[in-house]
Image (cartoon, rainbow, N blue to C red; front, top):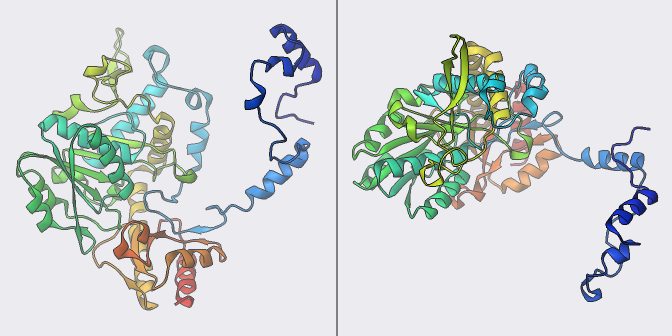
Length: 447
């Protein structure tokens, strides 16, 4: 039969011990005092034959809920979206699958071009001038943007909306602590950033204003109004945007954003237990030389042929540490490739249609919940997500939904006490009318 592991025979052990120059395993560990050695047997199951082990592990795996067999309404930053079949085919090719940083452009043209295309498409979606070749994820991209703003403006206060993902805000605070920067959080009103509170927080020492679009609660922020406030004391305007939503919404670049960041997970990247994903980072030309990481640029060689190279390599692997813009020293090139392939396969019209489906299905779900007597928290325009008052602990509701092969939404009570018993329900283009109706019915039966 096919062996997945190389077996070690007693003869193999003897040969290895002989090379080392000892007679036995006991002699090998003789330098370790008896008093610190583990006595007795480890609390593990007895070893099994490979076929029996595979069977046991397969049975355990089948107990997991997955998005192929369950209808998922769980979002909160990671979403169950359609992934074109071609994505897995392309990223599984060995020249991409095993590639790392393309230090030698002459032998890395395919990888460099793929990253260049990713950068180009991110610029088109966000309405910005330049994008880098991917960050770890949306949270670190947001924190890096705030650090750039503080360094560029030489100001020490970062103003961030509480409608920004709580995990992203936690990452931001960690970064800010290391740089001795102050983070000021602005509350929400009707599910969006409180503009009056934001304006009152603006002072000469504010380096930037950070908002999310659509925000953590699924609501669409009024970027035009926020931009006016953000720029009144020459601070920067940073927007964390869902790239899929930008297929239908006006891009932040059109509203005067200085930096647009986010996570490319909605394009071609599975939910995969919450990561890894792929952050993106886009700016105006004025900030181009301060972008963290590196960029891929297009050029021509000595024969006039088009080529691609790493340019503006401002990470510490390439230049002196004290001159580096960031300690982001790796990238998510494979996931960036997956996102680029997905966007290419969908095309401009496909991305727009996919975004519009998310909007229409979100509105349909909202109406169905309201018809069934539920209170939906906010009335403004929403993308992907709505907040539903379950009138009972969300944990109980989700346990019951699992019995119906439904993965329920995020428990907002973990985020804010005021949202106790409130569920953040995510609806993507993959959710069918039947699945949505079943969710509403099952939750209605629990009231």
